[in-house]
Image (cartoon, rainbow, N blue to C red; front, top):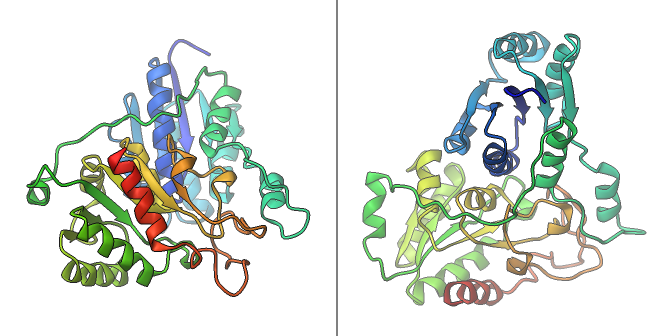
Length: 343
């Protein structure tokens, strides 16, 4: 590669996947300081990359100026001004392929992610299931950079980086003697969500034991649920709707532990080096989406021959009358959290 490189990185969604890219780019930037990174993703995800050196963030606006093929050509014209030396397509969807194709016509080197679709299909099918760990998504990202000629080795270690607390959150951290646990109980797909009545039991037990609890992630309906929990259980705080993404990351970075579904909360905690106890239903860490640097020992899940039956959690569980999420006892989650807090 030339001494000075400019590489465009494409990953437009989903939130957790983009956060994983940020974890990878922190290590890439440290190992390739001579390379400038132009990260292209949705504007809302910009805070994930605030602490990545040598990185310029270019916001994607898919519902307005970058909508449709005309909008994507406009994006291509915007990105041309950076004079990149290569394109790393970490998404491989219609939008990223279109942008890459425009650059390909100019002779630019382009490499894209191998998502391992056939392996994932074998892992989730109901008959002749091939139950084995697949290549981690973060390693699939790194493979793209290696194909472009870069040297990079991931450490797969959490690097705890406490950030300055937002002024309006400082009161929530007034008691330094209490353990601070974040809970991200929601997910884009309902099948990945631990039953809320059982999550309430988890919160009740942690609250009773003197743990300070912070609820993250969600929209209006989730905010209402979180508010109900805050009025019911002592030492419980709702952050939904009260802080922006940058502020949430700063708060998470000051926690002792995060409890999350297989969702973006896990990847946000990983980005700031906080250990996660994660709860898995129809999905499975074997598919490669475990948070960067997280331990599989902290994954709470049941063993069942039908698991996993979904990669993204958009399909219902096939474990019988009760779903695999229902079969997880609240005390199992509480025990795993206390094991981490006291370990």
